[in-house]
Image (cartoon, rainbow, N blue to C red):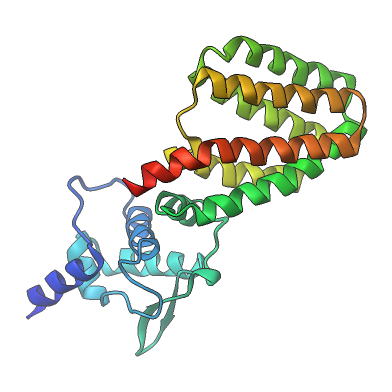
Length: 255
């Protein structure tokens, strides 16, 4: 009977034992369960398998499972109630700034809903920071940004390198803004977005050249101390660059 329950639980949520036992058990259990919840293996309103079944599936102790469930509660994915089990919550309750939750959400965002929202957040925050940088960037800040822009000019023929320097260029502008909180939020969401080709696309030389033309326009507005122009250039760049990547990303998702 117990074995039947375990098999049923595994099938219901596609839970499978690990091919190799991880060194840190509770975080690994959390990641597996977050992935299944986000992928709708356990839809909102359903309950997770009972503790003994989870112990058997993952091959871990009850202490590890309890620790994992507490972590899921802290991330907003489940609600545990005595005598009622552990119920999966609605997505609006999930903490999407939690790296594990955000990573899983991005990986399963086949219709690009979350990625569209993420780009909107980036655009709003980075345009604000570009305006702040235009007003308050030091000479050292501007020289550092210009150095990165020069490197990007060279790397348009090297898309893999260009993408990494592109991130550094944006981050240096955020740093120059002095807005620590906004920069932290953008870095959290952007790191997770960049783990999927749905967000990155497949950059080529032409796309890099277009992107760097937009970078140069941002740079010019920063040097001119044009806060409004820098904000518009930044938001236009982020949104236009995403639209260039988005259509190919949709084709990848559909297949």
